[in-house]
Amino acid sequence: MKRSIIGTLTLGLLWLGFSTSSALAQSGVDLIVNPAVPVTSLDKNALKDVLLGKTTYWDGGQAVTILLLTDKTDKALEEITGMPASQFKTHWQRLTFSGRGKQPKEVDTPEKLVAAVAEGKGTVALVPSGTELKGVKKLDIKP
Image 1 (cartoon, rainbow, N blue to C red):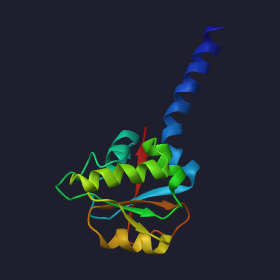
Image 2 (cartoon, rainbow, N blue to C red; image 1 turned 180 degrees about the vertical axis):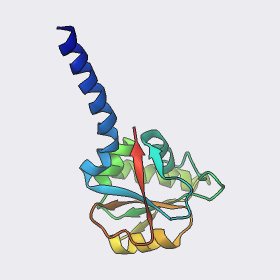
Image 3 (cartoon, rainbow, N blue to C red; image 1 turned 135 degrees about the horizontal axis):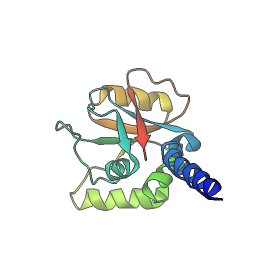
Image 4 (spheres, rainbow, N blue to C red; image 1 turned 120 degrees about the vertical axis):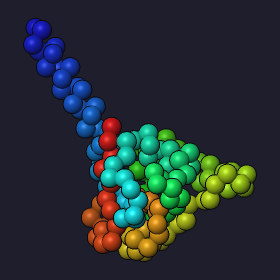
């Protein structure tokens, strides 16, 4: 009996650890940044802080610039931030109008998004899985 409880607890803890890191994969998106961004992974809370404008600079002093793919990554964005797309946009409108942030720029195709991330230092974006990631760095999401 003890072994089955311990086994069940172990499996549960493993599932929790993997569920966060695969959350983006389940949504069919990858997290990409400009190669000059000095990180290789983010935990889910750090990513949420970046996407909500609480973290405005990367380690090393580069300003964070968020790019969004119009209507194609809304599900993943909601999973990460806890906000539906409309509420996320309203959140950024308030930050922008109060002078506390710059509203994320929207791009209409995955190819344009990848190109913009490759060109823009400090840029971060969610892109559909399977998109060719030329000139950008894919980040791992840690629990």
